[in-house]
Length: 310
Image (cartoon, rainbow, N blue to C red; front, side):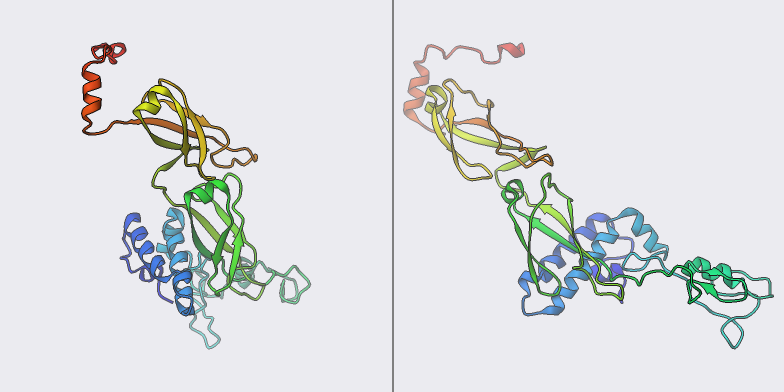
């Protein structure tokens, strides 16, 4: 099996930015939604996602580089090697264990490796000796990245996910969802003797072209016309739940923030944040009538920066 760096096509000493760039490129090419007729692409997608998740975890990457864990994040155990015909000899016993030439203490070794315990009269507890047995190992977990549109994350709309085996399932987003939130799908990972592992979905919230997130609130800069600012009026405003009508008060200035209650992200307690709408007065670039009006306007000489001391 190729090491994690080779899976992503990066050098062993690559920094996080290089690893992220390589992963995004491969994930886009291999995503199951774009390769419905190519099951190997789905398998590769799962492999590069697992590689990305491990290598972007600082502690796990260090363990992997030291050879302490394998590509699945599982601890590595030393194998056996020896000088005698049976594979065991004096001098060095199983790798990582020094002996005194009289042979290794295999009770300690098996206890360390398998959780077994040497028993009087021979045999080991946990190996047919009546002691506790470890359950068979489950299959490896499978990692996925789930990109969710901004409005759908705020409104908690269900997401359809295609797994590595080609099956699709609908996922309900949890309240309080944010960038990096993980969802565990029990039994949707790799098969194993003790049953399948789990699928771990990591949420990525896609940026929006005019909405931004501020905690549980959604912010929007809303252009308004000069007459709407001066005289007030009712205007149509986009929200994560769809357009609504909002009242602009008379005399609204640029930078004034208005609030639409309950139009933000869902909190963990079930309540919602707000949408904060900042008015931005849109002045025509070249309007002769407007220039003529301003030139004759009695308030033309007023200093709007007086409060700033300038």
